[in-house]
Length: 92
Image (cartoon, rainbow, N blue to C red; front, side):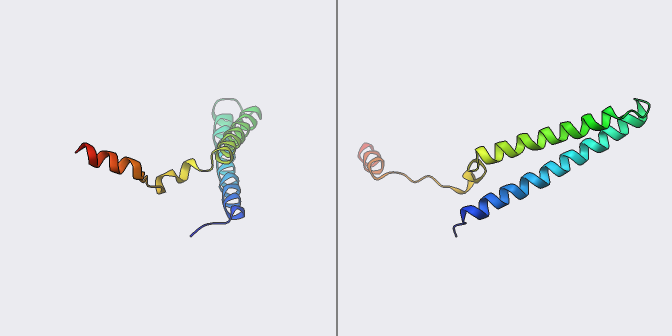
């Protein structure tokens, strides 16, 4: 069954939003721990962690929108052309 292009774009946006949210949250957690443990409760490790997470999420979104068909290639099967079938039959 074929999908509408709006559905594919919507799924890609959903993936991007969820992935970015997870990465920003992970950066927040790591930055908070580093701020408490190593940097005497400074704010910059938290901001740096959140910014790094947002940057990684943004890069993954750009990759998902630029190459939307790369993840779907496992579903395709190659078919042999008619000319190749007859040539291989002649050689045997």
